[in-house]
Length: 80
Image 1 (spheres, rainbow, N blue to C red):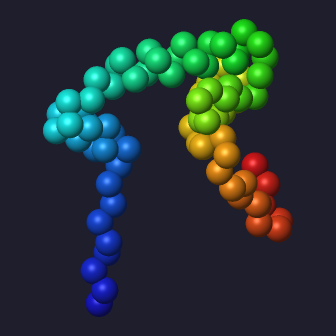
Image 2 (image 1 turned 90 degrees about the horizontal axis):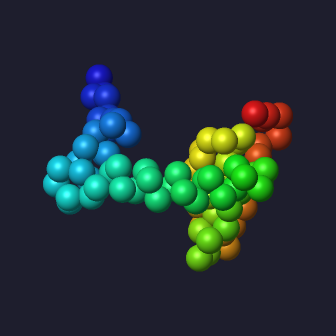
Image 3 (image 1 turned 45 degrees about the horizontal axis):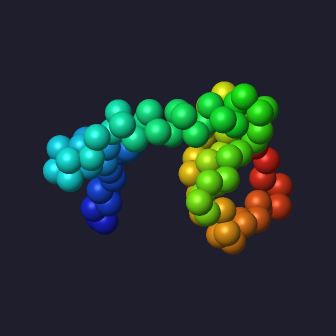
C-alpha cells in the first residue's frame, strides 16, 4: 500500500517564516493592507505596483502575482 504524501499547511509555512527566518508577519500584513487600501479606495479589482499585481475581491486582498506573468486559462466547464 502506498504511503500518503505529506502536506504542509499555510499556518505551518507562516510560523516557519516567522520563527526560523525571522520574517515579521505583522509588518508584511500591514504593508499589504496599505496597498489593498489604495485599491479599495479606488474601487479597483487589483493594484499593480513594481511589477506585482495585488488582487482584490471587494475589500479583501486574495492573492499576489507577478503583473507580467502568463495568464492561466480556466478549464472548460470550470467556473468560480
